[in-house]
Length: 483
Image 1 (cartoon, one colour):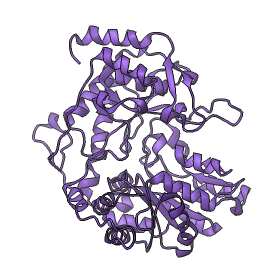
Image 2 (image 1 turned 30 degrees about the vertical axis):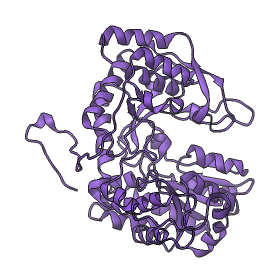
Image 3 (image 1 turned 180 degrees about the horizontal axis):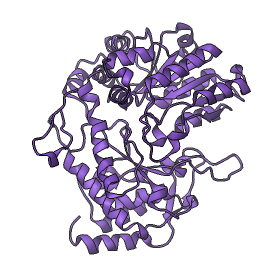
Image 4 (image 1 turned 45 degrees about the vertical axis):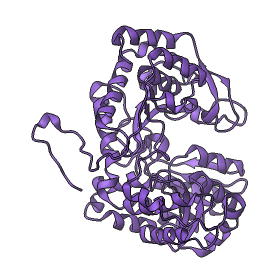
């Protein structure tokens, strides 16, 4: 990767290796309007309207900026239902990038999870993973299975010097397989760039060790590669064994040891869609019948063909170090800005975005008042910034109806790739700093409408007391007529 230093030492900032050619106008409502819009959205940042959001840091899923080559490729799409040349081009690229012969298309990552669960999970099964993701867990439990989280203990420490906090606990994996029996473990899921614990990566060495344990016990190894792009960057820059390898060599070394790989191209490839890929024809044939049943024909799987063309180019661009480094270096810059100020952040900086430790930020607030959710709403009031709660609101209740409190209460400030300028990142840091200085004003939330499944997507809450109005009043006092 190119190294560019500034002459003045105090001006060391991330340097984008791209230029902006298309722009979208933004709007920042007044702080009073933000309080009103938040109430209308049921204090759920998912339900805010984009027109009322200044910086949309909810997710990096499907909102990354495409390259000029991706946009150009969309114009050659072949929309034939069967025998599409677009499908043929995508299959060729998937073989080039992953080294796999077989490919099943799906409309996005959770569709792949549905197909995996339908095919392999039966009641009583246990699926080990370094950490769960919301939709993955929901699909597995829907089929009567359960999830075993086997991340190493460092993964749940808010701050650590471990560069690979997403790593599997290998002895714990071996012990679990011995206890429940390999027949009750349909597959082991490896999530690159562990989402719910701060986008923390796994080392290549650790993922290969997991694959070896699976092979020894006759269990399928399944890689969720949705966040693999950032994980590749971290392996290249943090893992000694990978420093002299190309991104393609790291990718191939990893993928050739996996039985199945699936991904959402809303993240990997910067397009819209998903896929399951493998070199095992028997496994593909087991899942194949579900594609026409749940997704679409085998040439598109629910994807729009222009998105498939963009995916093909985007996957190839994943092998370019100057493209995959932009997200992590912007995230690292934001995390450092906030950590230096004293804001409790998840360290080291991971992929996806900057993650605020809401339990520490709002020390003393009980989890029953959903500190991560409360902090996410406070941040919208403070700056029109839409982050995502990654804590207890994102969990699902226990079968007996009791609350299942999350291991960590995080607010994720996602950094969609090539979307924000450095001045906007600095604005975000400024508003979080102000909020931290006024954290004593932030109160909790309680449910008013709670869905049974994936409640964080469309449930509604209300503040406990009038703390949001007090926070807005403090903003007006400190910022005057500023937005």
